[in-house]
Image 1 (cartoon, rainbow, N blue to C red):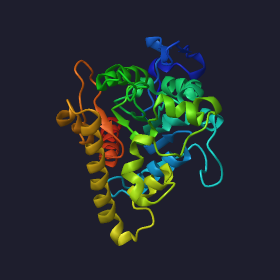
Image 2: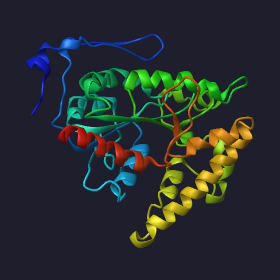
Image 3: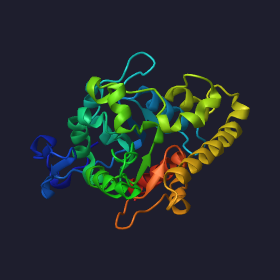
Length: 304
């Protein structure tokens, strides 16, 4: 059941969905034609081209006691096929049935998905941070690990996503962030591949797990994939503590002048940059807690 303002039908909506030269959204929404979809279910859309990230998000939420009975929707059956741009484009309208959208905004796949994302934002914008919430997961500024890169480059990076997607939270995922040199060497932007090689700056921290460790190996390990059900939660908690320790060490080495404050990005509240409203959080720390809280907020708003 679609609840529409001023009884405007979907075919009457005039929304200009354009991509600006900077790669962000330039979306015009005539105020009188905005739609509200209050008939949203306890449903979460996981929107990414990366089957490994999709599986990680799916498994974390499916096994979390904090998120009971939530329906998890993937673009396709990731056990049978890779996710395509068409899969994501096809689910755009279906997102109006969900209370939470988890969107992958990493730089190497964002250009291919911009048209589909424009549609998703257009359908849901009026309900963002009320009946529907967005959680975005992405990499960091392109020049962060280059000479002259600065942690404050995150501020405009976050601002772009805050404007484009109105997220309740931004999760920076270090496993998605490759330097410019790595991208060139692996041909990431050229062949549109989704790399499974660990970023070079993180390899030393994961070497104890064996040689040729992939991103999938790391994700499975830190969600305690394959552990017995009665031991999985405790094992996952211990491993998450180890991951936090590793990331704190990396932060101290890479950004020593601000490390004492920057480590807040590993906490639930995140790290806030001066002049930017959207904090920096780190995936997967407190991911399930954020999702549970946002689902509850949407539920209360819909029930009001």
